[in-house]
Image 1: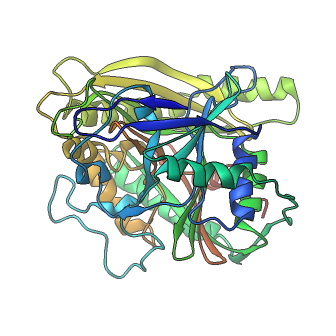
Image 2: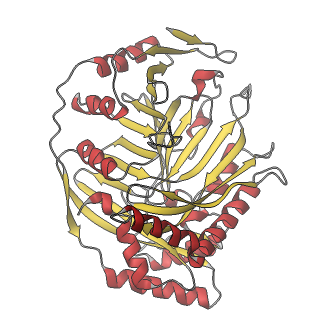
Image 3: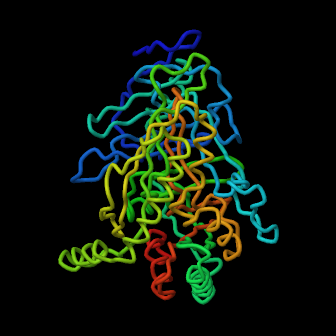
Length: 450
């Protein structure tokens, strides 16, 4: 057993090894088979090896003991442990796109006439124990605040079960409307050419019905589209989130040691926007050509350049002067089903910036709104016939120490009972082609196999 000392007045975190060899998917599957409450699985983003692109760190848990609808659940707790174990997730949850209405203009809000989505407010669950997997070392340990919580989770994971999940599939309940989406794209292009804005991200919603088990469907989605920030979350009341997100919205690390009053202000910030898409090709030669076309495409380069500027501005609002930098310039990355362009930005948080100010500056992301950001959000609210809900919001965790990691809620299916909502879309600029934009939305939904 490992015991990690924490900051003054705090209970120590405890770690015990998992005594059976399981992958994160197998572990979460065992918990689902056992009907454990609020099962969750998260991949953290880093890869174990560049050859396999397998996520290095993954987290699996069940049996939460608290919940929160705050934008930042860590604010509810006045003390945070420090040390190596404190990086383990404590709060896991989601923040929908419409979680905050008054971005810079207090009057902005989505039209009331649009139907409400499945998820309208932040939903966080606090887990007293989490199993932490490290693919690089092959080790797994259960970390928590109490031995009883650790043993409850460890016992559920180590209990042998016959995992014979039934196949799962989706059926369309409302077919995508190509004509309607292309009309929205054409209207967006008109507004851009009129000088209203430079870029806007426009999406549409697909409604599906689930046949089979949700976790079996998640396995299938992940097999078709492995993702660095994949997530399976059971949020209660019949809500589940199945995500194969490839994009980092925000990573925010606290300073060391954590503040004595427990506020754990952020010290370092990162964001990794994605823009530009090409489908994978059937053979290696054609696939390399697709990647080259994406790398050389002036329109796609302009899309990402504009979004990098928006994210740079958002970071700059809460960063030390001169600290925002482009760590990795735009480059092409390859996933199982598509090629993307992405860039990585980093900054040092201003010492006077609160945790809430950082979140308000970065949510929702410029990557999925447009430029200028607020005007793009107004156009989105006018063009899209439904509220987005979780789509283009955030999925992630807050650690015991207070650090935060949020993935962009794209390539994400939100289920309520057996009905699911899946959004797909793309960035629109002056020279966008409506037919091509429609095709791109299909590339981003291939993991659904519908």
